[in-house]
Length: 384
Image (cartoon, rainbow, N blue to C red; front, side, top):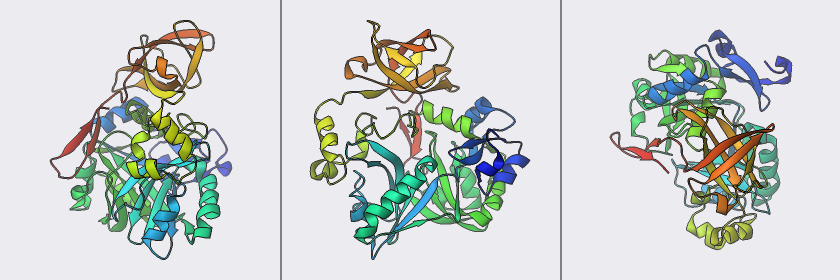
């Protein structure tokens, strides 16, 4: 591990990761496997081909309770630009917390569950998010509860739901971004049709005391292999999905980040969330910069923080995420540049430690996203 075990928190699957020969590192204050024996490329390709199991128990699971769901939803809309009031029980959606400048404090999933809301936020922003919710939603009659008694698993890949259905008949009826409680290996789990790889798959909220049994039952299936942080990062990068702290931060607005799709018409018109005026201005006019995909002409990956130069040699932006895309078949990256430099096929230069690499602006995502919508025969494929 990169830090002593005593300085990091352990998920309930820590011992299982060690048993499976996981190489442990400290990530956002948690001890997590970065890879297993086969290595990140093999884990990545197996996810695209079959199914992989990821331990994402470091993510923050937070519940919002009030006298009814409507109170929770109206209160949360004072902090996020999503339509939470219109979110039906059994559904969930992606959104962001914004600050007064329209910057992103964190990105998250919000789910409507009976008469309360469940949020899944980033581990690195846990303390900030919990304090924000308590300070701003508490006075509105909302109780904020951290669910430290729950673990979170992600089963991702084209075989993921078929595997889960073997243990939980009926799970394949879930549509994309729907959730429901199923019994998995004898344990009640809240299962959502969602994930962070661009593949079909599910995420399972599991009682922490029972998660090892559920994980072992899933890993017992021949289609499933364990996968670590490195594969998760290359999978999400190929799918054009943002990582908080790299591609998103408090100086980046959802419009700049290409997340305008998460702001519906009512919220654009009514506002009512921090930074709404800034976001409205950027939706009406071009923002000062845009997130773009980048590919290289060479074989050397360009990493985060490399400068991006235009044809005149002027620094116009920087790379925020970069690495090798095993399914894409070459180095890929994402970064921010001004609108004039954001058109597809624009040639830029990445400068990293005094070394230059030619980069070409490329539409996102780098590989087709495959999300399942409603029926078992209806596999939704998204290429942009």
